[in-house]
Length: 458
Image (cartoon, rainbow, N blue to C red; front, side, top):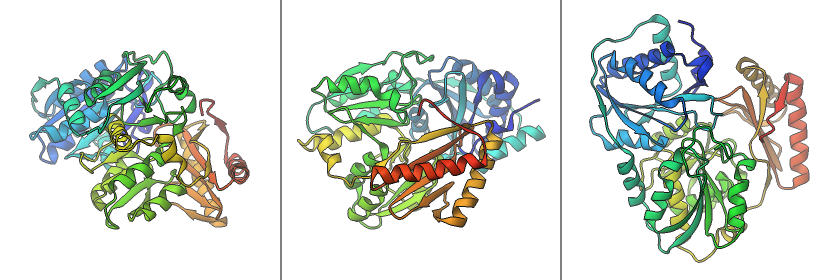
């Protein structure tokens, strides 16, 4: 069997369906994951998927593979990814889970996010699956298949966790993706008046791509909010584990500034460690200290952050891409629909608008995430390696994930994406002029190490 080893990423398995996920490959993925679950003493997994057109067929292939190992499979339907995460906490007899999702990637892509023992299944675990497949070393047996409609109970859990002090008027942009399954219902049940944008499920994503880190994808909800009368706008990525926030004036509130507001809400003592990834603003670190917590800069990636949260007992953490994680009064996984509810709850406690709360925070000039497309995954890693070696030799750097180059009055970041043949860069400084200088310096140096192309969507 021919298999593209680059689909085995750091924290999930992802590829182009027509090229990478033929029937025999997906069956093998199901067999390999279930084999690991069985060898660790597990007996049952849940299986679900997002709204992409390829998801139902991939789900059937994966299920067939898992059942052939003797592991039982509960098919819990078409769900947002956090609904899949919810399943491993909701059912006492479930040991692992698989969500079939392409997240924010184009419609022709899809993938597999895995959970075992209520923890993210990533890194070496995923490489172990590849080893099992290459050696054809599977468990065998006859598992039992069952179906269960988990969506209503997931929505109940989200709604139950939010307490609004006053009615809210909001706009919701689901991008025709997984949040369209339940976000409007959830917020209406919380007590909101909701104006829906693109909240009809369509796996071709005909209106705009469901990725709230890309400014172009937020233009519709910004325009709606600017019409007036809204408390906030909420936008979601493809599988509803990442949140975009628009203030009442139509301005984007990026995730690191959302995190400042949430951190203030949850920090109780210096023992409260707030973890954030290397792409986040210096303002976040400064404010966590001011609020009495302990800032912890860490690797980008939902699996990395969740694992570190468990290790350090963090009540809340997040990353610049919009993955935010509440262990405070919730389960500790990234659930954008719940996180939107927490933003509403926070705003309902005050008569002050969101824009006013943000205006009080430290001001840095920063770029959004900029993605530089490389010719291949192999070239991406080579360019990232050369960039890290150069900058560490010549500047003060943090290398917990890629390289964050510190210039005193600003910083630049270069890291390899774990999901695409892309380098992710970001820049920040006290003045716009200095930010542009840092960006030019870093981008010129990257260009010396290999061919990259600016992703026009960014």
